[in-house]
Image (cartoon, rainbow, N blue to C red; front, side):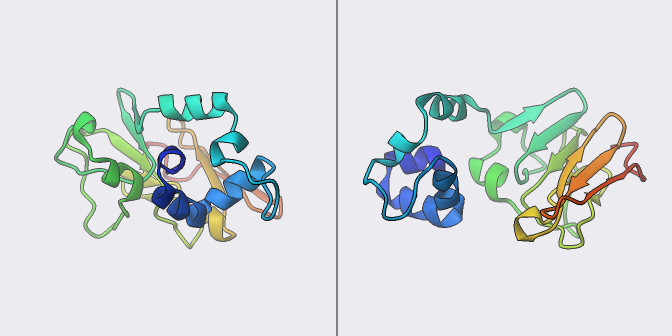
Length: 162
């Protein structure tokens, strides 16, 4: 969204309402501050890094995605809309045709617990609404979580086969 916002004013307005304003503030931007183009607030090397990022990461055993996937399509054919915006519905989710375990986010688990469907693990544990920020070691199944108050918790439950 940031990269689109740098090219298009309509995309800029949408991005600003979807976290873009917070992102700009992290770069020192303040409402009512100096009128500079958005691109001037974000260092060139950061823009170049983001432009070079791929929309997913794939290993021999796992797919790592922001949001979701279409199960029948190879990763290189996945539409950006699915990779960035698809919501995980545990009731209808299906394994990716590759047989790899997908590690996704974007669908907040209000319980604060990792959603483990075996073929799909959702580690979005509602951090943006005061829940937990979650990290998962896919080799060991170890989960680490932190919340806004600085509380930490760690589990090694039934995620060993992730």
